[in-house]
Image 1 (spheres, rainbow, N blue to C red):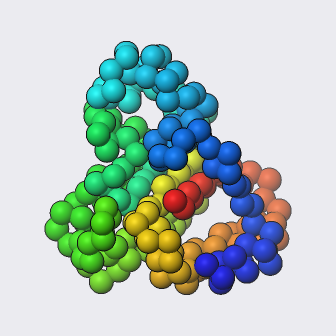
Image 2 (tube, rainbow, N blue to C red):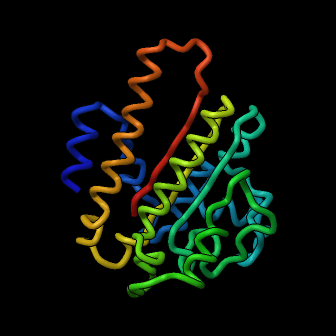
Length: 207
């Protein structure tokens, strides 16, 4: 993703290789560790009551800490068939965050998805599923800025990259546009020197 990489480098945006050291080759053990600071075995014992197919509502996800401190929270994925907490698992009884994008993605995949790959759907109607996910992130950011709200936003993107290693290039321009948007916000805050600017945490994981 050359264009996006150049924007990150030029604007010195933060990039974290959080999964450079991983617990397992599969998604779930690594993601649950990143979001809870617990291993898969610890989560199974502490909040899943020793049962693999048990709801995750009682688990210590990081967005709960943000919520307790007055943040609006959001979580989304773009490949519902293999979503982190629903694939061979029970998921959540209730939406885990204020804005839960998986519900939206489920509807898109059921009614307007196109170009099915091995495990994922590449498009929602005429748009890349990945681009829809980025738009979702931008809309939440704009909403929280409009209401001067602090927010935590985390997205796990797999629709392009899970099945074919070269497919992420399809989303390079879309990601680049999102990064330009984030860069604009960063520069605007710096220029205005806002003392009470909303504190935010936006995380985008590409797998």
